[in-house]
Amino acid sequence: MDKVQLEERVKELNQLLHDTGYAYYVLDQPLVPDAVYDQYLQELIAIESEFPDLIYPDSPTQRVGGTILQGFNKVAHTYPMLSLSNAFGREDLDDFDRRIRASIGDDFSYVCELKIDGLAISLTYENGVFVRGATRGDGRVGEDITENLKTIRSIPLRLKKPVTMELRGEAYMPKKSFMALNESRVEQEEEKFANPRNAAAGSLRQLDPKIAASRNLAIFVYGIGGDGEAYQLDSHAEALDYLDELGFQTNKERKTCHSIDEVQAYIEKWTTKRPDLPYEIDGIVIKVNRYVHQQELGFTAKSPRWATAYKFPAEEVVTTLLDIELTV
Ligand SMILES: NC(=O)c1cc2c(=O)c3cc(F)ccc3oc2nc1N
Image (tube, rainbow, N blue to C red; front, top):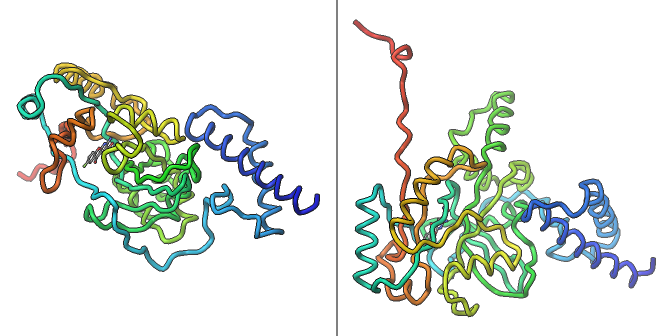
């Protein structure tokens, strides 16, 4: 092939790998067998190694960087990453609901989401290309962990539309990956991680992206920085559907609720179903749906007034009497 034909083939392979990667990692519906995916990847790696000028920054071959970082740069979030207030029972939920109604009246809806027990992350895209990812940090400044986040296959390196936006998401380690990781750590005589959240945090703090890439991390995106008006979005529910269209992994268990009773029913449903989920959740996030209402409700110094997190009761640790040396 001459250079022009090579350039065409590289473009074609990039598109093929993006589309098959999206189907496999985001939709969980493989378009081609793994062997075919690997064949495309190997062909692209071969051309790129011979013609480095044909390497696109968002080429799938760039997901796992080569260099080991010396440390993480600090990065300021365009929109502060705040934290959620907590609700521990029905009374707290009723108080939350009463405060909302007192402020915006009765004509509104909630969106309920599973509260993924991972690490809050911000993702920045410029003209549809993934340019930076960071931890929450203190809410205003986080650590730049772009290289590690690139290794998460469900984070698109290029979006289906050339939009510029800053997103919020929760990076997590699926339960199965957590169990396998701890088994291998025991074999290597290394200390086990206490829970998937710590394992995900530890993995994203690795200075060597190859280690992060080996940890099978995943992410659910759950919000757009700012109030969405730049994308002509009227509500949070619409924003999540828009993120699906752009090629992101959002959590599909979300539900629009029209009363706190419906919210309570959603909480009870997922309190029961929680053990069957392939990832850890530590509660349910409840958000007022329409952006105009969120703007009216505003924020306290550290939390949005338009959202709260119902937290599951901490699982009491049952210490069997047999474990306790009875000192008489
Ligand atoms: N862990 C989560 O699954 C999750 C977390 C948050 C937040 O932390 C959060 C913090 C805010 F200030 C505003 C909205 C939020 O929405 C959120 N939505 C979620 N689904």
